[in-house]
Image (cartoon, rainbow, N blue to C red; front, top):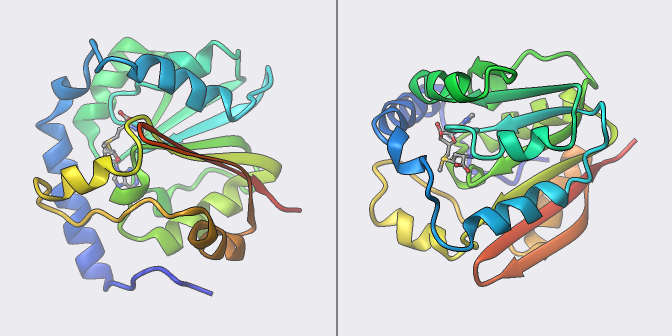
Length: 208
Ligand SMILES: C[S@@+](CC[C@H](N)C(=O)[O-])C[C@H]1O[C@@H](n2cnc3c(N)ncnc32)[C@H](O)[C@@H]1O
């Protein structure tokens, strides 16, 4: 079932601690103004989830929460924001007090079964070290017919640029056939796939 790279739990925890500390030092890199074109592309990413009024939304690897105000425009019932970095979440909470922050790796979230309508992973998929347990847990938390959006507002080639500078491993965003093989075992079917030079969006739907 699991096509993702296997690592020991010790290794996963070591990399997650390293990432949490790394991003805690980078909070202001994510502050506006964002690079040209990024705000418009973030709007497209959030629109692709087709959030309905009253939906419950989770933003995985939320960072300083650049998606949060865009999600809030759709009037969800609740927005959960999870990240490894407590410092990033503290910054987010100051700006968006309505968001419910959770400091945890996505694989360890304990939100109830079938409680989420929409899950975002924006600029975060390459960073998730334990993707297998991460997607098992997202699948558990999602309602049938819910949408999970995996995206990057600079396109998938941006990861190549980041890899040279990153002190921890980063995985590439998958092409569509590979994405199908990777995500179908967790109950996700791809319903939209955008792979442009500066925009990557994969929308998946949770099977019944
Ligand atoms: C490049 S930042 C992107 C932040 C935000 N989504 C954005 O678009 O600005 C990646 C974030 O993912 C978080 N992260 C990495 N692995 C994670 C995991 N397993 N669970 C939750 N968050 C994770 C990091 O702490 C970091 O804040």
